[in-house]
Length: 523
Ligand code: NAD
Image (cartoon, rainbow, N blue to C red; front, side, top):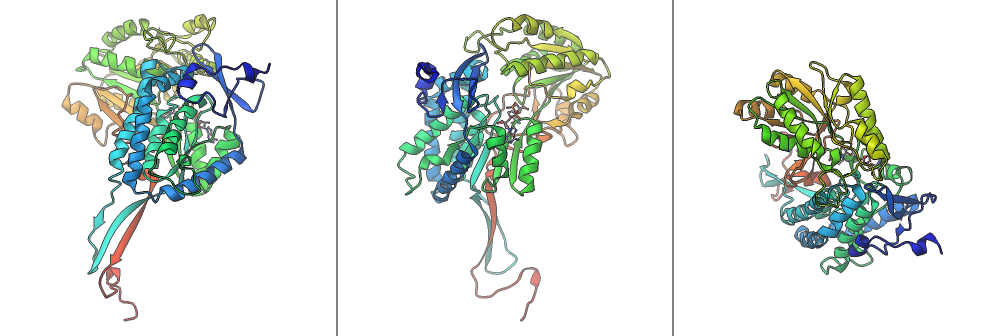
Protein backbone atom coordinates (compact mmCIF):
# COMPACT_ATOMS: atom_id res chain seq x y z
CA UNK A 1 0.00 0.00 0.00
CA UNK A 2 1.48 3.41 -0.95
CA UNK A 3 1.90 6.29 1.47
CA UNK A 4 -0.83 8.17 -0.42
CA UNK A 5 -3.33 5.35 0.18
CA UNK A 6 -2.77 5.25 3.95
CA UNK A 7 -2.66 9.04 4.35
CA UNK A 8 -5.64 10.23 6.35
CA UNK A 9 -5.95 14.02 6.23
CA UNK A 10 -6.38 15.82 9.57
CA UNK A 11 -10.02 16.27 10.60
CA UNK A 12 -9.66 20.07 10.37
CA UNK A 13 -8.93 19.78 6.64
CA UNK A 14 -12.21 17.93 6.26
CA UNK A 15 -14.10 20.60 8.20
CA UNK A 16 -12.55 23.26 6.00
CA UNK A 17 -13.55 21.37 2.83
CA UNK A 18 -9.98 20.85 1.60
CA UNK A 19 -9.28 17.21 2.56
CA UNK A 20 -9.48 16.23 -1.13
CA UNK A 21 -7.71 19.32 -2.48
CA UNK A 22 -5.46 18.23 -5.38
CA UNK A 23 -2.36 19.89 -3.91
CA UNK A 24 -2.66 18.11 -0.53
CA UNK A 25 -0.90 14.75 -0.51
CA UNK A 26 0.77 12.34 1.90
CA UNK A 27 3.83 13.77 3.64
CA UNK A 28 6.99 12.35 2.09
CA UNK A 29 10.22 14.07 3.10
CA UNK A 30 12.16 12.17 0.42
CA UNK A 31 10.08 13.57 -2.43
CA UNK A 32 11.49 16.89 -3.70
CA UNK A 33 8.24 17.61 -5.54
CA UNK A 34 6.34 18.13 -2.29
CA UNK A 35 6.81 20.21 0.81
CA UNK A 36 5.99 18.61 4.16
CA UNK A 37 4.16 20.87 6.59
CA UNK A 38 4.74 20.08 10.26
CA UNK A 39 3.01 20.68 13.56
CA UNK A 40 5.58 22.81 15.41
CA UNK A 41 4.23 21.62 18.78
CA UNK A 42 5.11 17.99 18.03
CA UNK A 43 7.50 18.17 15.09
CA UNK A 44 5.33 15.63 13.28
CA UNK A 45 4.09 16.01 9.69
CA UNK A 46 0.50 17.16 9.10
CA UNK A 47 0.45 16.69 5.33
CA UNK A 48 2.44 17.09 2.15
CA UNK A 49 1.69 19.81 -0.39
CA UNK A 50 2.61 19.37 -4.04
CA UNK A 51 4.91 22.16 -5.21
CA UNK A 52 3.83 24.00 -8.31
CA UNK A 53 6.04 24.80 -11.26
CA UNK A 54 6.95 27.92 -13.20
CA UNK A 55 4.58 26.75 -15.96
CA UNK A 56 1.73 26.52 -13.46
CA UNK A 57 2.58 30.01 -12.22
CA UNK A 58 2.44 31.27 -15.79
CA UNK A 59 -0.96 29.64 -16.36
CA UNK A 60 -2.24 31.11 -13.08
CA UNK A 61 -1.20 34.64 -14.09
CA UNK A 62 -3.03 34.19 -17.41
CA UNK A 63 -6.19 33.03 -15.64
CA UNK A 64 -5.96 35.93 -13.18
CA UNK A 65 -5.56 38.43 -15.99
CA UNK A 66 -8.67 37.09 -17.74
CA UNK A 67 -10.62 37.27 -14.48
CA UNK A 68 -9.35 40.82 -13.89
CA UNK A 69 -10.53 41.99 -17.33
CA UNK A 70 -14.11 41.13 -16.33
CA UNK A 71 -13.96 41.83 -12.58
CA UNK A 72 -12.81 45.45 -13.05
CA UNK A 73 -16.00 46.26 -14.97
CA UNK A 74 -18.32 45.03 -12.20
CA UNK A 75 -19.54 48.08 -10.22
CA UNK A 76 -17.52 48.33 -7.03
CA UNK A 77 -20.56 48.10 -4.68
CA UNK A 78 -21.47 44.81 -6.38
CA UNK A 79 -17.95 43.60 -5.74
CA UNK A 80 -18.54 44.75 -2.16
CA UNK A 81 -21.61 42.52 -1.89
CA UNK A 82 -19.50 39.51 -2.91
CA UNK A 83 -16.82 40.53 -0.42
CA UNK A 84 -19.54 40.67 2.26
CA UNK A 85 -20.33 37.02 1.53
CA UNK A 86 -16.62 36.14 1.72
CA UNK A 87 -16.60 37.75 5.17
CA UNK A 88 -19.58 35.57 6.10
CA UNK A 89 -17.69 32.47 4.94
CA UNK A 90 -14.76 33.39 7.20
CA UNK A 91 -17.20 33.91 10.08
CA UNK A 92 -18.54 30.42 9.46
CA UNK A 93 -15.04 28.92 9.33
CA UNK A 94 -13.58 30.91 12.22
CA UNK A 95 -13.13 27.98 14.60
CA UNK A 96 -11.67 25.32 12.28
CA UNK A 97 -9.53 27.80 10.35
CA UNK A 98 -8.30 29.44 13.57
CA UNK A 99 -7.41 25.99 14.89
CA UNK A 100 -5.59 25.14 11.68
CA UNK A 101 -3.55 28.34 12.12
CA UNK A 102 -2.60 27.08 15.61
CA UNK A 103 -1.87 23.57 14.38
CA UNK A 104 0.35 24.61 11.49
CA UNK A 105 1.91 27.88 12.75
CA UNK A 106 1.92 27.23 16.50
CA UNK A 107 0.25 30.39 17.86
CA UNK A 108 -2.25 29.77 20.64
CA UNK A 109 -5.88 29.08 19.75
CA UNK A 110 -7.15 32.51 20.89
CA UNK A 111 -4.64 34.17 18.59
CA UNK A 112 -5.44 31.77 15.74
CA UNK A 113 -9.12 32.65 16.02
CA UNK A 114 -8.17 36.33 16.29
CA UNK A 115 -6.31 36.05 13.03
CA UNK A 116 -9.40 34.75 11.21
CA UNK A 117 -11.39 37.55 12.85
CA UNK A 118 -9.05 39.97 11.08
CA UNK A 119 -10.18 38.49 7.76
CA UNK A 120 -13.81 38.99 8.84
CA UNK A 121 -13.11 42.56 9.96
CA UNK A 122 -11.32 43.58 6.79
CA UNK A 123 -14.17 42.14 4.71
CA UNK A 124 -16.67 44.20 6.74
CA UNK A 125 -14.49 47.27 6.24
CA UNK A 126 -14.37 46.64 2.49
CA UNK A 127 -18.15 46.46 2.12
CA UNK A 128 -18.25 50.15 3.04
CA UNK A 129 -15.08 50.89 1.11
CA UNK A 130 -16.68 49.54 -2.06
CA UNK A 131 -19.07 52.52 -1.99
CA UNK A 132 -16.22 55.00 -1.56
CA UNK A 133 -12.89 54.57 -3.41
CA UNK A 134 -13.18 58.31 -3.79
CA UNK A 135 -11.12 60.86 -5.70
CA UNK A 136 -10.85 64.61 -5.26
CA UNK A 137 -12.22 67.25 -7.60
CA UNK A 138 -10.38 70.52 -8.29
CA UNK A 139 -11.35 73.86 -9.73
CA UNK A 140 -9.91 74.37 -13.20
CA UNK A 141 -8.25 77.66 -14.15
CA UNK A 142 -9.96 77.37 -17.54
CA UNK A 143 -13.56 78.41 -18.13
CA UNK A 144 -16.10 75.62 -18.70
CA UNK A 145 -13.64 72.94 -17.63
CA UNK A 146 -13.96 70.38 -14.91
CA UNK A 147 -11.02 68.63 -13.25
CA UNK A 148 -11.18 65.60 -11.04
CA UNK A 149 -9.31 62.45 -10.21
CA UNK A 150 -10.53 58.89 -10.20
CA UNK A 151 -9.04 55.57 -9.17
CA UNK A 152 -8.82 52.44 -11.31
CA UNK A 153 -7.60 48.94 -10.42
CA UNK A 154 -4.08 47.91 -11.40
CA UNK A 155 -4.41 44.32 -12.66
CA UNK A 156 -3.26 41.10 -11.04
CA UNK A 157 -1.62 41.77 -7.68
CA UNK A 158 1.19 39.44 -6.59
CA UNK A 159 0.92 38.75 -2.85
CA UNK A 160 3.86 37.13 -1.03
CA UNK A 161 3.32 36.33 2.65
CA UNK A 162 5.28 35.32 5.75
CA UNK A 163 4.56 32.26 7.91
CA UNK A 164 3.57 34.09 11.09
CA UNK A 165 0.22 35.50 9.93
CA UNK A 166 -0.70 32.83 7.41
CA UNK A 167 -4.31 33.99 6.94
CA UNK A 168 -4.57 37.65 8.04
CA UNK A 169 -1.82 39.15 5.89
CA UNK A 170 -3.34 37.63 2.76
CA UNK A 171 -6.77 38.92 3.81
CA UNK A 172 -5.51 42.48 4.43
CA UNK A 173 -4.10 42.47 0.91
CA UNK A 174 -6.39 40.31 -1.18
CA UNK A 175 -9.74 41.46 0.19
CA UNK A 176 -8.83 45.13 -0.23
CA UNK A 177 -7.22 44.53 -3.64
CA UNK A 178 -10.25 42.59 -4.91
CA UNK A 179 -12.64 45.27 -3.63
CA UNK A 180 -10.64 47.73 -5.73
CA UNK A 181 -11.25 45.55 -8.82
CA UNK A 182 -7.97 43.63 -9.00
CA UNK A 183 -7.32 39.92 -9.29
CA UNK A 184 -4.96 38.41 -6.69
CA UNK A 185 -2.23 35.81 -7.04
CA UNK A 186 -0.97 34.60 -3.67
CA UNK A 187 2.35 32.90 -2.97
CA UNK A 188 2.30 31.86 0.70
CA UNK A 189 5.17 30.73 2.93
CA UNK A 190 6.07 27.07 2.47
CA UNK A 191 5.90 26.74 6.27
CA UNK A 192 2.11 27.32 6.29
CA UNK A 193 0.63 26.10 2.98
CA UNK A 194 -2.44 24.41 4.50
CA UNK A 195 -3.79 27.66 6.00
CA UNK A 196 -3.19 29.26 2.60
CA UNK A 197 -5.13 26.58 0.75
CA UNK A 198 -8.00 26.72 3.27
CA UNK A 199 -8.20 30.54 3.21
CA UNK A 200 -7.98 30.88 -0.54
CA UNK A 201 -10.50 28.09 -1.08
CA UNK A 202 -12.94 29.88 1.24
CA UNK A 203 -12.84 32.91 -1.05
CA UNK A 204 -12.98 30.79 -4.22
CA UNK A 205 -15.98 28.87 -2.91
CA UNK A 206 -17.94 32.09 -2.50
CA UNK A 207 -16.84 33.31 -5.93
CA UNK A 208 -18.04 30.04 -7.52
CA UNK A 209 -21.42 30.09 -5.79
CA UNK A 210 -22.43 33.74 -6.14
CA UNK A 211 -24.72 34.85 -8.99
CA UNK A 212 -23.60 38.50 -9.31
CA UNK A 213 -20.40 38.06 -11.29
CA UNK A 214 -20.83 35.44 -14.02
CA UNK A 215 -18.55 36.42 -16.92
CA UNK A 216 -18.46 34.19 -20.01
CA UNK A 217 -15.37 32.01 -20.53
CA UNK A 218 -13.86 33.10 -17.21
CA UNK A 219 -13.89 31.28 -13.88
CA UNK A 220 -14.96 33.93 -11.32
CA UNK A 221 -12.96 32.09 -8.65
CA UNK A 222 -9.76 33.07 -10.47
CA UNK A 223 -10.03 36.52 -8.88
CA UNK A 224 -8.48 34.70 -5.90
CA UNK A 225 -5.64 32.49 -7.11
CA UNK A 226 -2.90 30.67 -5.28
CA UNK A 227 0.44 29.29 -6.33
CA UNK A 228 2.53 27.21 -3.95
CA UNK A 229 6.15 26.79 -4.93
CA UNK A 230 9.76 27.38 -4.09
CA UNK A 231 11.26 30.86 -4.20
CA UNK A 232 13.51 30.05 -7.18
CA UNK A 233 10.76 28.29 -9.15
CA UNK A 234 7.79 30.55 -8.37
CA UNK A 235 8.80 33.48 -6.09
CA UNK A 236 11.57 34.98 -8.23
CA UNK A 237 9.62 34.62 -11.50
CA UNK A 238 6.73 36.49 -9.86
CA UNK A 239 9.03 39.38 -9.02
CA UNK A 240 10.25 39.61 -12.60
CA UNK A 241 6.81 39.22 -14.20
CA UNK A 242 5.68 42.47 -15.83
CA UNK A 243 2.10 41.22 -15.82
CA UNK A 244 2.07 41.76 -12.03
CA UNK A 245 2.00 45.57 -11.67
CA UNK A 246 2.23 45.44 -7.87
CA UNK A 247 4.04 42.97 -5.65
CA UNK A 248 2.90 43.20 -2.05
CA UNK A 249 5.48 41.32 0.01
CA UNK A 250 5.49 40.61 3.73
CA UNK A 251 8.57 39.06 5.34
CA UNK A 252 12.14 39.72 6.39
CA UNK A 253 14.13 42.81 5.45
CA UNK A 254 16.46 40.52 3.49
CA UNK A 255 13.56 39.34 1.35
CA UNK A 256 12.25 42.91 0.97
CA UNK A 257 15.57 44.18 -0.37
CA UNK A 258 15.51 41.49 -3.03
CA UNK A 259 11.88 42.20 -3.96
CA UNK A 260 12.55 45.95 -4.19
CA UNK A 261 15.54 45.43 -6.47
CA UNK A 262 13.93 43.01 -8.91
CA UNK A 263 10.53 44.72 -9.09
CA UNK A 264 12.19 48.16 -9.16
CA UNK A 265 14.38 47.13 -12.09
CA UNK A 266 11.24 46.65 -14.18
CA UNK A 267 9.69 49.82 -12.67
CA UNK A 268 6.94 47.80 -11.06
CA UNK A 269 5.35 48.83 -7.77
CA UNK A 270 6.05 47.24 -4.41
CA UNK A 271 4.24 47.31 -1.09
CA UNK A 272 6.72 46.11 1.51
CA UNK A 273 5.86 44.98 5.06
CA UNK A 274 9.15 43.87 6.58
CA UNK A 275 10.83 43.23 9.90
CA UNK A 276 10.45 45.29 13.06
CA UNK A 277 12.52 45.96 16.19
CA UNK A 278 9.86 47.49 18.36
CA UNK A 279 10.41 49.25 21.66
CA UNK A 280 8.35 50.32 24.64
CA UNK A 281 9.57 53.35 26.60
CA UNK A 282 8.59 53.46 30.28
CA UNK A 283 8.74 56.76 32.17
CA UNK A 284 8.69 57.29 35.98
CA UNK A 285 4.98 58.26 35.91
CA UNK A 286 3.87 55.09 34.09
CA UNK A 287 1.22 52.77 35.52
CA UNK A 288 3.53 49.80 36.08
CA UNK A 289 0.80 47.16 36.32
CA UNK A 290 -0.61 48.25 32.98
CA UNK A 291 2.90 48.40 31.54
CA UNK A 292 3.79 44.89 32.74
CA UNK A 293 0.65 43.44 31.14
CA UNK A 294 1.32 45.21 27.85
CA UNK A 295 4.95 44.08 27.80
CA UNK A 296 3.94 40.51 28.53
CA UNK A 297 1.48 40.38 25.62
CA UNK A 298 3.82 42.30 23.32
CA UNK A 299 6.98 40.30 24.04
CA UNK A 300 5.64 36.81 24.79
CA UNK A 301 2.47 36.67 22.66
CA UNK A 302 2.82 34.56 19.48
CA UNK A 303 6.10 33.37 21.07
CA UNK A 304 7.75 36.59 19.92
CA UNK A 305 6.93 35.82 16.28
CA UNK A 306 5.01 38.96 15.38
CA UNK A 307 6.49 41.73 13.28
CA UNK A 308 5.22 44.05 16.04
CA UNK A 309 6.59 41.98 18.95
CA UNK A 310 8.11 44.09 21.74
CA UNK A 311 11.83 43.38 21.50
CA UNK A 312 13.28 46.30 23.49
CA UNK A 313 12.13 47.81 26.76
CA UNK A 314 13.64 51.21 27.54
CA UNK A 315 12.95 52.06 31.17
CA UNK A 316 13.70 55.04 33.37
CA UNK A 317 16.26 54.14 36.07
CA UNK A 318 13.81 55.06 38.86
CA UNK A 319 11.31 52.32 37.90
CA UNK A 320 13.38 49.68 36.12
CA UNK A 321 13.81 47.39 39.14
CA UNK A 322 10.15 47.57 40.13
CA UNK A 323 9.07 46.77 36.58
CA UNK A 324 11.56 43.94 36.19
CA UNK A 325 10.34 42.36 39.43
CA UNK A 326 6.80 42.30 38.04
CA UNK A 327 7.94 41.00 34.66
CA UNK A 328 10.15 38.28 36.08
CA UNK A 329 7.26 36.99 38.16
CA UNK A 330 4.91 37.06 35.17
CA UNK A 331 7.43 35.48 32.78
CA UNK A 332 8.13 32.58 35.12
CA UNK A 333 4.44 31.72 35.29
CA UNK A 334 3.75 31.78 31.53
CA UNK A 335 2.31 28.37 30.60
CA UNK A 336 4.31 27.13 27.59
CA UNK A 337 2.88 24.19 25.68
CA UNK A 338 0.35 22.86 23.21
CA UNK A 339 -1.13 25.93 21.46
CA UNK A 340 -4.52 24.23 21.21
CA UNK A 341 -4.72 23.76 24.99
CA UNK A 342 -6.81 26.62 26.45
CA UNK A 343 -4.38 27.04 29.39
CA UNK A 344 -1.36 27.73 27.17
CA UNK A 345 -0.15 31.31 26.72
CA UNK A 346 2.91 30.57 24.61
CA UNK A 347 3.20 27.90 21.93
CA UNK A 348 6.30 26.67 20.14
CA UNK A 349 8.56 28.44 17.67
CA UNK A 350 7.95 27.55 14.05
CA UNK A 351 10.91 25.19 13.54
CA UNK A 352 14.40 24.05 14.62
CA UNK A 353 16.05 26.91 12.79
CA UNK A 354 14.07 29.45 14.81
CA UNK A 355 15.14 27.74 18.06
CA UNK A 356 18.77 27.78 16.91
CA UNK A 357 18.49 31.49 16.02
CA UNK A 358 17.12 32.24 19.50
CA UNK A 359 19.94 30.33 21.15
CA UNK A 360 22.55 32.15 19.03
CA UNK A 361 21.03 35.55 19.88
CA UNK A 362 21.06 34.84 23.64
CA UNK A 363 24.67 33.66 23.48
CA UNK A 364 25.70 36.72 21.50
CA UNK A 365 23.86 39.06 23.89
CA UNK A 366 25.66 37.50 26.87
CA UNK A 367 28.99 37.84 25.04
CA UNK A 368 28.11 41.48 24.46
CA UNK A 369 27.65 42.09 28.19
CA UNK A 370 23.92 41.47 28.77
CA UNK A 371 22.81 39.61 31.89
CA UNK A 372 20.12 36.98 31.90
CA UNK A 373 17.05 37.74 34.02
CA UNK A 374 14.97 34.70 33.05
CA UNK A 375 14.62 32.11 30.28
CA UNK A 376 17.81 31.61 28.27
CA UNK A 377 19.58 28.63 26.75
CA UNK A 378 19.16 26.22 29.68
CA UNK A 379 15.40 25.76 29.06
CA UNK A 380 16.14 25.34 25.35
CA UNK A 381 18.48 22.44 26.17
CA UNK A 382 16.02 20.96 28.63
CA UNK A 383 13.11 21.17 26.22
CA UNK A 384 15.16 19.88 23.27
CA UNK A 385 14.68 16.37 24.69
CA UNK A 386 10.90 16.69 24.23
CA UNK A 387 9.05 16.85 20.93
CA UNK A 388 8.24 20.25 19.42
CA UNK A 389 10.16 23.50 19.10
CA UNK A 390 9.64 24.93 22.57
CA UNK A 391 11.62 27.68 24.27
CA UNK A 392 10.98 29.86 27.30
CA UNK A 393 10.42 33.61 27.21
CA UNK A 394 13.67 35.36 27.94
CA UNK A 395 14.66 38.71 29.43
CA UNK A 396 18.17 40.09 29.07
CA UNK A 397 19.36 43.21 30.85
CA UNK A 398 21.59 45.53 28.85
CA UNK A 399 24.54 47.20 30.66
CA UNK A 400 24.05 50.94 31.23
CA UNK A 401 25.29 53.13 28.41
CA UNK A 402 25.84 50.34 25.88
CA UNK A 403 23.86 49.30 22.81
CA UNK A 404 24.87 45.70 22.02
CA UNK A 405 24.81 44.89 18.30
CA UNK A 406 22.35 42.01 18.81
CA UNK A 407 19.71 44.44 20.12
CA UNK A 408 19.67 46.14 16.73
CA UNK A 409 18.62 42.92 15.00
CA UNK A 410 15.22 41.28 14.79
CA UNK A 411 15.47 37.75 16.23
CA UNK A 412 12.08 36.15 15.63
CA UNK A 413 11.74 34.73 19.16
CA UNK A 414 10.56 35.82 22.63
CA UNK A 415 13.66 37.75 23.71
CA UNK A 416 13.28 41.09 25.49
CA UNK A 417 16.27 43.40 25.92
CA UNK A 418 15.89 45.83 28.83
CA UNK A 419 17.70 49.18 28.67
CA UNK A 420 18.00 51.61 31.60
CA UNK A 421 17.91 55.35 30.84
CA UNK A 422 17.89 58.68 32.66
CA UNK A 423 15.66 60.75 30.38
CA UNK A 424 13.06 60.67 27.62
CA UNK A 425 15.65 62.11 25.22
CA UNK A 426 18.02 59.22 25.91
CA UNK A 427 15.16 56.76 25.49
CA UNK A 428 14.11 58.28 22.15
CA UNK A 429 17.68 58.08 20.85
CA UNK A 430 17.87 54.37 21.67
CA UNK A 431 14.39 53.69 20.32
CA UNK A 432 15.02 55.38 16.97
CA UNK A 433 18.61 54.15 16.73
CA UNK A 434 17.81 50.96 14.83
CA UNK A 435 17.31 50.26 11.12
CA UNK A 436 13.70 49.11 11.46
CA UNK A 437 10.75 51.46 12.05
CA UNK A 438 7.55 49.48 12.57
CA UNK A 439 5.91 49.87 15.99
CA UNK A 440 6.64 51.89 19.13
CA UNK A 441 4.98 52.73 22.43
CA UNK A 442 5.41 54.85 25.52
CA UNK A 443 3.90 54.36 28.99
CA UNK A 444 3.42 57.65 30.80
CA UNK A 445 0.71 59.75 32.43
CA UNK A 446 2.36 62.97 31.24
CA UNK A 447 0.68 64.74 28.33
CA UNK A 448 3.91 66.55 27.59
CA UNK A 449 5.97 63.37 27.34
CA UNK A 450 3.29 61.63 25.27
CA UNK A 451 3.02 64.52 22.83
CA UNK A 452 6.81 64.78 22.62
CA UNK A 453 6.85 61.08 21.68
CA UNK A 454 4.19 61.64 18.99
CA UNK A 455 5.76 64.81 17.58
CA UNK A 456 7.75 65.12 14.36
CA UNK A 457 10.89 64.87 16.49
CA UNK A 458 9.55 61.82 18.33
CA UNK A 459 9.07 58.20 17.33
CA UNK A 460 10.18 57.48 13.74
CA UNK A 461 7.92 54.40 13.44
CA UNK A 462 4.79 53.78 11.37
CA UNK A 463 2.90 52.94 14.56
CA UNK A 464 3.18 55.01 17.77
CA UNK A 465 1.08 54.15 20.83
CA UNK A 466 0.48 55.74 24.23
CA UNK A 467 -0.21 53.36 27.13
CA UNK A 468 -0.78 50.47 24.71
CA UNK A 469 1.86 47.92 23.72
CA UNK A 470 3.48 47.59 20.30
CA UNK A 471 1.44 44.68 18.95
CA UNK A 472 -2.21 43.92 18.29
CA UNK A 473 -3.19 46.60 15.77
CA UNK A 474 -6.79 47.04 14.62
CA UNK A 475 -7.62 46.71 10.92
CA UNK A 476 -9.16 50.21 10.69
CA UNK A 477 -5.80 51.99 10.64
CA UNK A 478 -3.12 51.85 7.97
CA UNK A 479 -0.57 49.23 9.06
CA UNK A 480 3.13 49.37 8.26
CA UNK A 481 6.47 50.90 9.10
CA UNK A 482 9.30 53.12 7.99
CA UNK A 483 13.02 52.71 7.20
CA UNK A 484 14.00 49.05 6.69
CA UNK A 485 10.45 47.96 7.51
CA UNK A 486 9.76 48.98 3.92
CA UNK A 487 7.39 51.97 4.02
CA UNK A 488 4.29 50.07 2.86
CA UNK A 489 0.83 50.55 4.37
CA UNK A 490 -1.94 48.01 4.19
CA UNK A 491 -5.28 47.16 5.80
CA UNK A 492 -7.46 50.19 6.74
CA UNK A 493 -7.53 53.98 6.34
CA UNK A 494 -6.64 54.88 2.72
CA UNK A 495 -4.27 51.93 2.18
CA UNK A 496 -6.57 50.88 -0.69
CA UNK A 497 -4.87 53.53 -2.82
CA UNK A 498 -1.78 51.29 -3.06
CA UNK A 499 -3.83 48.83 -5.11
CA UNK A 500 -5.18 51.39 -7.58
CA UNK A 501 -3.90 53.84 -10.16
CA UNK A 502 -4.86 57.50 -10.01
CA UNK A 503 -6.14 59.20 -13.10
CA UNK A 504 -6.48 62.98 -13.37
CA UNK A 505 -9.26 63.92 -15.76
CA UNK A 506 -10.04 67.29 -17.33
CA UNK A 507 -13.34 67.73 -19.15
CA UNK A 508 -13.94 70.70 -21.46
CA UNK A 509 -17.66 71.31 -21.72
CA UNK A 510 -17.32 74.70 -23.48
CA UNK A 511 -16.80 75.64 -27.16
CA UNK A 512 -13.31 77.16 -26.85
CA UNK A 513 -9.93 75.55 -26.30
CA UNK A 514 -8.12 77.70 -23.71
CA UNK A 515 -4.65 76.44 -22.76
CA UNK A 516 -3.34 76.19 -19.20
CA UNK A 517 -0.87 78.82 -17.98
CA UNK A 518 -2.47 81.28 -20.48
CA UNK A 519 -0.36 79.95 -23.34
CA UNK A 520 -1.46 81.14 -26.77
CA UNK A 521 -0.58 78.74 -29.55
CA UNK A 522 -1.18 79.50 -33.23
CA UNK A 523 -3.96 82.02 -32.63
P1 NAD B 1 10.82 35.38 4.93
O1 NAD B 1 11.41 36.66 4.47
O2 NAD B 1 11.70 34.22 5.14
O3 NAD B 1 9.70 34.90 3.87
C1 NAD B 1 8.57 35.68 3.58
C2 NAD B 1 8.01 35.30 2.23
O4 NAD B 1 8.92 35.75 1.21
C3 NAD B 1 7.85 33.79 2.02
O5 NAD B 1 6.66 33.55 1.31
C4 NAD B 1 9.06 33.46 1.18
O6 NAD B 1 8.88 32.29 0.42
C5 NAD B 1 9.16 34.70 0.31
N1 NAD B 1 10.45 34.92 -0.33
C6 NAD B 1 11.67 34.87 0.24
N2 NAD B 1 12.62 35.13 -0.69
C7 NAD B 1 11.98 35.36 -1.86
C8 NAD B 1 12.40 35.69 -3.18
N3 NAD B 1 13.70 35.82 -3.49
N4 NAD B 1 11.47 35.86 -4.13
C9 NAD B 1 10.15 35.74 -3.84
N5 NAD B 1 9.70 35.41 -2.62
C10 NAD B 1 10.60 35.23 -1.63
O7 NAD B 1 9.99 35.72 6.27
P2 NAD B 1 9.29 34.73 7.31
O8 NAD B 1 10.34 34.06 8.12
O9 NAD B 1 8.26 33.92 6.64
O10 NAD B 1 8.50 35.78 8.24
C11 NAD B 1 9.08 36.49 9.28
C12 NAD B 1 9.45 37.90 8.85
O11 NAD B 1 8.31 38.57 8.31
C13 NAD B 1 9.89 38.75 10.02
O12 NAD B 1 10.99 39.54 9.63
C14 NAD B 1 8.67 39.61 10.31
O13 NAD B 1 8.96 40.81 10.98
C15 NAD B 1 8.16 39.84 8.93
N6 NAD B 1 6.75 40.23 8.95
C16 NAD B 1 6.44 41.54 8.72
C17 NAD B 1 5.11 41.95 8.79
C18 NAD B 1 4.75 43.39 8.57
O14 NAD B 1 3.59 43.65 8.35
N7 NAD B 1 5.68 44.33 8.61
C19 NAD B 1 4.10 41.03 9.05
C20 NAD B 1 4.45 39.70 9.27
C21 NAD B 1 5.79 39.31 9.21
